[in-house]
Amino acid sequence: MKTTQYVARKPDESGFIHYSEAEHQVWNTLITRQLKVVEGRACQEYLDGIEQIGLPLERIPQLDEVNRVLQATTGWRVARVPALIPFQTFFELLASQQFPVATFIRTPEELDYLQEPDIFHEIFGHCPMLTNPWFAEFTHTYGKLGLAATKEERVYLARLYWLTIEFGLVDTSQGRRIYGGGILSSPKETLYALSDQPEHLPFDPIEAMRTPYRIDILQPLYFVLPELKRLFELAHEDIMGMVQRAMQMGLHAPKFPPKAA
Image (cartoon, rainbow, N blue to C red; front, side, top):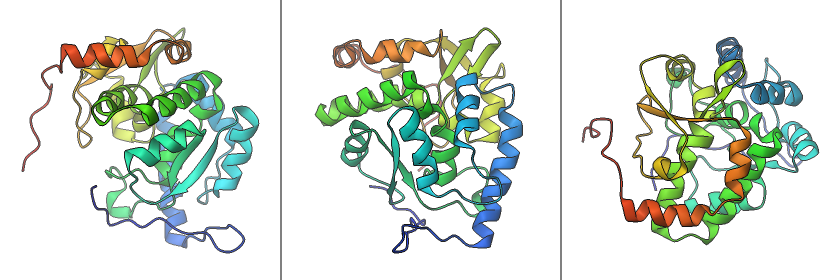
């Protein structure tokens, strides 16, 4: 597993996580900036979720605050984890309707991008969508499938996750919108994803599973759902059968240069 400079914060005896004033300031900078950027770009389900959760602007929220809303809307909750977790733990959590949240926040030096998912990425990027039953159902199914999958199958499932839950777009009556948390927590990618620079393809789960990606660049390609309900429908289709087909067909050539050594 990769190493990280970040260490997740542990709660005190009463379950409260203490952050410094400087960390609250980073949260404030990130959330106030990003709320402006996602306006008119995020899908309505995400904006509804933001409103329901009622994230504070001036401080990092406590996980219990988020849990109260998630449990009341879709039965989900967030679970405190270290900075990086193994695939197995990740699938176990999702299969039990728990979304992993690392309880650290990026440093001011890494304000625009960091490779490890921090509390801003997880809470601001993903939790609003988890108030939506279609999205929540797909994420739950994904966790259960991943838990039972082989190591090789998990790699194909990971691509599906990356190109939906992290970097998915959706067509709406208002136009093309973002629902992927990896985009919604990044000011740069929020603007770029809906521009004419990247390629947009109609969503096809098998094609998504065959598409290589890199985590450290702006995505060259996004898949677009015809509507968000497509995720709910996909949750009830034979996803593992699709994994087998994708494995037989093999990977597409990457649309990006190899990572420099």
